[in-house]
Length: 271
Image 1 (tube, rainbow, N blue to C red):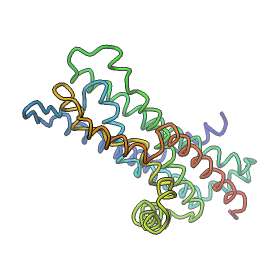
Image 2 (image 1 turned 180 degrees about the vertical axis):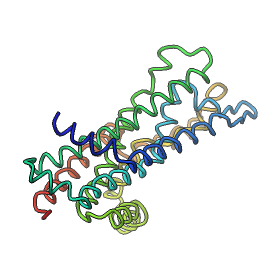
Image 3 (image 1 turned 30 degrees about the horizontal axis):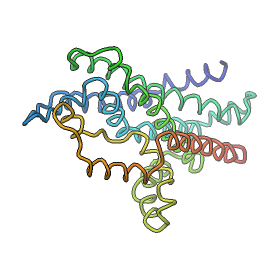
Image 4 (image 1 turned 90 degrees about the vertical axis):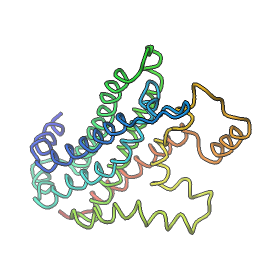
């Protein structure tokens, strides 16, 4: 609780934190608002159904995943601020351990990920209630599993950012390398290593947690069924990638690895 209070004072009173959180929320809500007002209904293809229960959870989780990089940049700004103003050094002098310093930042990253999950939940609940005709409680609850999955994904983005800022300390290089890692550094690495390893690379597997919704299938679900050949092709694509459960466990493993490496860096870093 002492660490939580310290982090609360430093974080909630930091204007840059408020700006980046507000930017994240505005961009997400803007995309949601635009998509909710798109009218496209031709020969039974009703695109509005992607925001009906239960599809709204998958759709909004996918939208929110677009802006997880902003949460990573937020993490970098928060931690680099500690180095620039020597607050880490001051806290060590005041009696906090290096493990407690890291624990405080991991706590903040968890709260940021919870914020991202709650933003999608509240938005999805409102949009779903407004847009869905004659929905049931089962419709509302079905698909809620995308929310904890989004939380894990957002946490992974912020913990990876935490690792980069512990390596570089300053915001500029940390943000640049963090963004470049997602493109083009990891894509280049994936192009030259075996396919069996490619699908387990951090950025690739983290991004796979929130897949793009099947817009065509959702739009046409009231009037057609997929043909056999289409189903076979879909099954082949699914079998080529880890299941969602395995993917989630691997991302959690990456989260632990990011924290452990950050801990080793923090233990040996001179403040």
